[in-house]
Every structure is written in C-alpha cells, then in structure tokens.
Length: 345
Image (cartoon, rainbow, N blue to C red; front, side, top):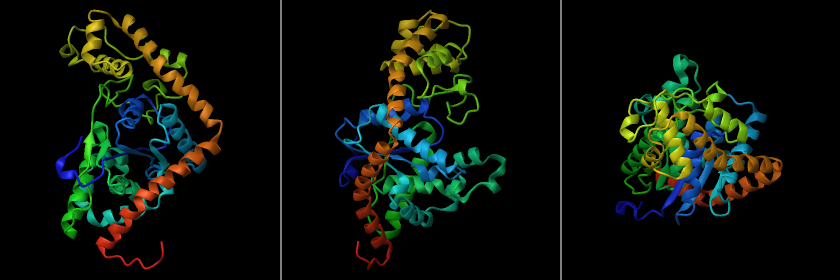
C-alpha cells in the first residue's frame, strides 16, 4: 500500500459514514468490515461518524443524536476496537469545518458542478438544496486531509469525491509551493464493495430506500434476515458454472457476491459450489451464512445502546485523540496560507 512518492507521510487510513437511518449490509460489507480488517494491518486507522455531513439535509436533533450513537455501536459491535482505532464524531473536532473553508477557497466551482452525487441527491429541486449539500465534497476532502490520510477505503460511488480530494491537495500544494498534503489513495477491494438492492439488482442497497425489504439492516434479527433473503428478487435459472454466466443476471450476481463477502470466499468459489443449483437451495444457504455473521452484531448493538453514556465517553476519547493529530496539521495549514495565529494554543 506504500507509494514511494508518499514516503514522507506516515501511513494512515481515514474513512467515515453518515449517521442517518440504520446501517445496512452494504455499509457493513463495503466499509465497516474492511475498517475492522485494516485495524490489524499495522497502519493507524481513524474512523469518523460524519454528523456535519448529515445536516446537509435537515435532521431532527434527537434522531441525529440517536443515529450517531447507533452508528458508533455498530462499528464496535462489528469488531472495531476503539483502543486500537480512533473512533469519534466529526463535529467534536472543529478542524474539519475550519479546513473545509480553506478548501472551499481552493476548489473551483466547475469541479463542484461535475459532482454527480449532488445532482442525484438534489434532483429537480437543486435550487432549493442547501449550500452545504453542494459544497460537502470539499468538507469530505477536509475530513481526509486534516489527518494527512494516505489511504481511504471507499465504495465505487465515492471514487469521484476522492478524486476531488486529490485535486484539492494537488492545487493547494501547487498554489503555495509546498509538498504538504498527501495525494490520498483509494482502497477498493473485496467481493461486495457495491452491494445492490434485494428488490432491484440495478440499484445500490441504500439506507434511504423506502422499501425495508430492499436491504438487510444491521439491527435486523435472525428471522428478519432469513425472510428478506428468501424473498429477494431472483430469476428462474439455476446458478451457472462460471462467473461469466452471471453477466446479464444482476440479482443473481448480487446474491453471489454477498455470499462470497460474508463467507470470506471468492465469487468464483461460490459459483463452483452451487453450480447447477437453484435459488431454492442457494437462498437458505445464504441466509444461514448471513445470520451467522450478522445476528451477533445486532445483539451486541442492542447491549451497547443500553448505555449511551459509555458510547459518548468512547466518542469523546476518540475526539481527543483525533484532535491531537489534526491540530498541528491545521495550524501548519494556517501558517502556509498566511493566517496570523498570535493567541496561545
């Protein structure tokens, strides 16, 4: 994972998830599962609950607090150790918003206009969308570069935002004649980095989909998980002998990829095991694997959520550790830009 050109920067992983609705299987396989694996890689890992991003659309304050704690609980229940990784909520480290403003002045409007996610989220009412929703890729760049993160695990849908982060870092370094911010590398790996809806294999599994049957929530119990997989949309054909046979079968391919990711197998191995078998055989096997992996997470989340004060303590401790990394980087950024800093720290 080390780029010789980046050797001056301490290897550090950063990533974050918004605290909106319940975490679902796509978040777990595409992000949280890899977060847990990366904390064993010997590289410092910084994981953030991006509550400032969440308010780019209106949030009920009580719901936002609950969702933030629930997301923290899901991280921990999934195996993330807050003693080995830094876990905190974004708004407790002011440097995120402070660096974002500087990056607002580095990024170009044309770059923001090319961000496809704003167009998708704002839809036909773009004129009524918040300025925060429009500018949030700049805040995302600040989230990453505030820690001089060298690697970011991202889903396919976030690659464009990471490219913007790289553009902002490059332009800042060029504008001020410094080699200060790293050119962060994406980490995209695994069998199910993009998990699709259980009701429509052409759409990404989403926390915001109005149909709860379209996703597996990490709070779902064993019976609900099994029932959702039994009712997942599929076709009438048996599973093929090779992956090429899934080319035009998005729902089948999605379920194979989910099985592979949950069972730590390759999709090729899954197809090899179930070749010629129908979904009447495959779905129960998939449900069994999913329940075995996910039901304990739901149980541990419930236990953790019974003690919100402990979750808040963990987030506060993580914020202190995060700020200790961020503060010197933000101070140096201010110096580079030309801001006078005459107050004692």
